[in-house]
Image 1 (tube, rainbow, N blue to C red):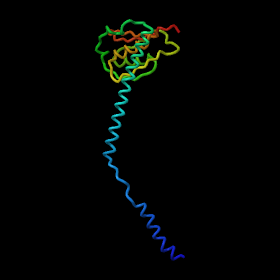
Image 2 (image 1 turned 30 degrees about the vertical axis):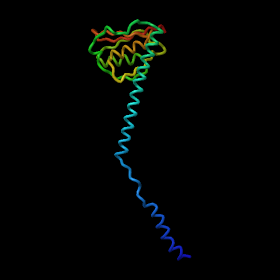
Image 3 (image 1 turned 120 degrees about the vertical axis):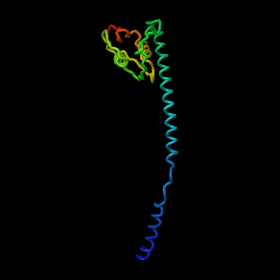
Image 4 (image 1 turned 90 degrees about the vertical axis):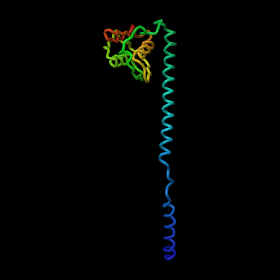
Length: 168
């Protein structure tokens, strides 16, 4: 019995090791990298399109809301022409109005002033511009602020001010 076991054991071990010795299938790394790059570009294009659609939708909603609660009859700041306010900025922001107005003022080299008592519930704005002039962004913020806050731009004095209009 031992002789049979000793003579069969090497054959069994050889068969088992033969199963482990096969080479894995080779994968073309350049082909995989090319496919991943193509997929990444498609994803980036889809994200960019979604960002632009969202920005357009938010602008439309802002105009609709402005029509419901008209405070101004014309687009704000059309009479302001300052080179500093033409600076292109990239802003993706959802939050209190004061923080974003302060950041824009700082970015264009203007001083920031705030007047009035901030309401208990903050005035929130949603801004999403991959690239726009600071003046266009301020126009959008002013439209979203509606009757809760007002932005005043004094280009000669290099001042951007925010005034809260609520009586909380």
